[in-house]
Image 1 (cartoon, one colour):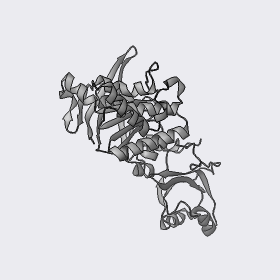
Image 2 (cartoon, rainbow, N blue to C red):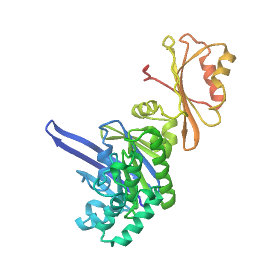
Image 3 (cartoon, rainbow, N blue to C red):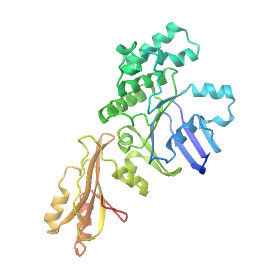
Image 4 (spheres, rainbow, N blue to C red):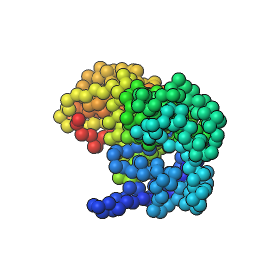
Length: 344
């Protein structure tokens, strides 16, 4: 297991259109053995951040520490050795198309000068781990997208890494295949204690497997924390936007939208496992004999627990809304005011 610490990391690039600040003063700690998500919109700096973690991109300033050792103090040889302990998988797999599945997994072992027999034995063991033992002699062109990613994962595990960096590793996959790959990563994390960093633009990926999440916006660390906390209490506009865009393709997520009442007060209510299945809103309306508008609602599985939110709007001339709010609180519902809601 391995801890990753970023201290005030900044990185910029010079383009024909000028200087682009990809990362701005990022400080972040990823603890040993956890699955950590990094999420943001396109251009937020996610891929640059993950490439700085293994010094494929060297930061302009700041430090990256692995188990307390700063990578910028490593010699070229030491950095090469450290990178062998940091596996990486990509969106487009990066397999050698003219090599068999077995040869692809053996490739990093050959670089480490392992003999062919030992390399083959280890590669077969890893292919068995990812469920592709029968595909050893197949070529990448003969595999599905999910199978290619499993080969890439097996190859990344060949050097017994302490850390596994996943840069949009599920973005090219359909939802069902994505789910199976995420389950595989969870199994690898639990079995070997490998620290896993998942770079993604999909909040559904984060909520399924990650313990903690960092949200980037324009190269800046906008928000970080436990996934459950960020989902329940997003502190920033970008976090709320990412959560609202998280309309999962699986049947567990549902979105309900309705017409807006005449610009009444909008609140966001947050419900958990105990309240998600109670008809609280229906009972609220029956109790106070006053309608509320459900603007948006969703229920999600976060870490094995039902979590959800709903945007509701009171009548603009309501005289009972404070009592209705208290009713919701009394029934275990958390409330927060919404000031930035835009109708879809």
